[in-house]
Image (cartoon, rainbow, N blue to C red; front, side, top):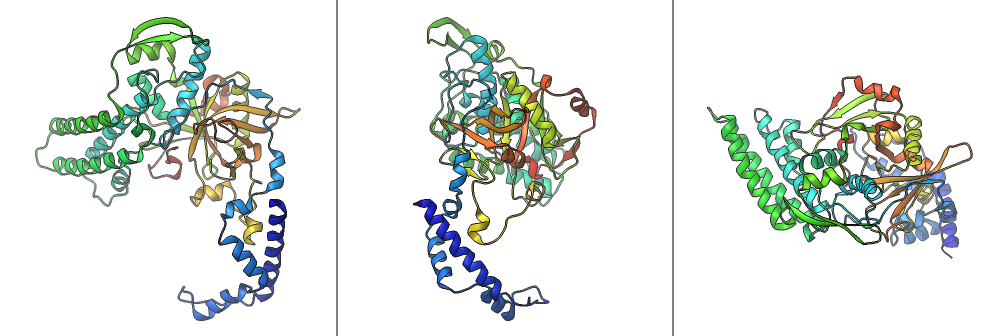
Length: 475
């Protein structure tokens, strides 16, 4: 029934387009750049006031265009079989928070921990613990950056960017690398989620408000004659104590030592021991993050170059993450090699584009917006990125690929962090065409990267400003 309704709507639209073409006359120009009376007459005249127009308008004003544009015939392309898949564990749920980067990074670490230590499938590291220190460290990053830039006017673009973005819950793989190496990890049952770790908007707004207030105070102090770095650091420490209290009240205070019982995949107790967060990390998830490389497909910039983004870190004394910009033809084989070796990857993309939310299937043919609106949407990936129409918005864990007889990818699958009931049992499936158009970043272990690609890191990175479109943190 829905299919017949959509076909009828398309027929009505086609009739409308024909009528509009007949009404289209000679273009009217206006030298002052505004819409003149003559131009408005031509614009109105191009729209046909016919019975088909009225019928189509009655349909569209009462419906979500995405539902009407859904290509039902494309649903037959959905297939959940994969020739190569990394065995994954229980799907996580970031709830109403922007912590996809954290859940994704920890999924990579926990998948290894479960396999190496025979842990239960539902084992998780505590996202609340890591998020506490993420927010504290981001607060310090902002406050110290305000001190560093105090000589610049408030209208300076860097200073404006800092005060527009004092803190947030988004991020990327840099956060996992910076934070777990500095603060370690704890199991989720040692520091469980709270309302405010699952629902971050309220506390994020309060933290942002307080940090902006603190930022203005530090700028004023730093400009005072005779002000010493020691005095600024003392006041900054007092400010961070306030932030710590706000976080402890809403997230709970992170443990410095805890006792935990390890269980096997049958739920049987194996060992009870006392740990610090760092000793727990070293036993269950110790990782050499220097062996991880971020590769990106950004067609607006030169390929085979290394880029670095200012403030693209979660910890002030950490490192900005560097990425190698590569064409998709170089990225896909590395991803395939990692999956074949049962190794998941941190992966980010523009998740909302052409996503069928009912079945978790992503394909560039899922929605026919052009046919619905009687026009075309013809920008390519480079044009979409350069005009801010597309960019990396969400991180997930790349875990499967389906290959044809010649070893070429047909489709891919990611483990999401929106709960097990979303999409296909908590996973999203994307065609290779979608992968090429809307995939942006993937983090790979060194052993899956060819020597000629690794050698590119010998270049001096090209520094990009914090407000570059590629900086946008995954949420």
